Length: 112
Image 1 (cartoon, rainbow, N blue to C red):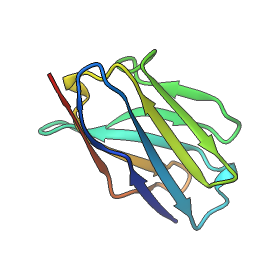
Image 2 (image 1 turned 90 degrees about the vertical axis):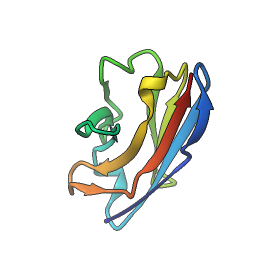
Image 3 (image 1 turned 60 degrees about the vertical axis):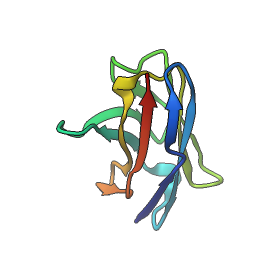
Image 4 (image 1 turned 30 degrees about the vertical axis):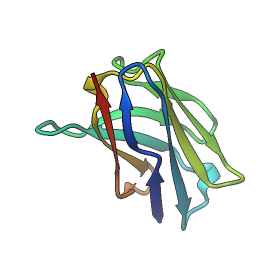
């Protein structure tokens, strides 16, 4: 199972970014997928999860601002991030939950 995350970058507070994670090596459509993040000096935390059936869950800190989605035809999971805050600065990782496989991470930096 391989995951390739992209879409990170530098954005001002209040701005938006969309992360993408392309997956291969598994039957993507039946896997639960997630986005996680790790800020400097902090533990990795879950941001959002999307299940194979489309159900989603979010960390309280991002509810109403972030949206996780998936395109099974493209084997890709997305994280739309709006109203970004400096505290969202972190390396963001995608994960195939069922296989416990992780992508390489993409850095998101939000300036104040």
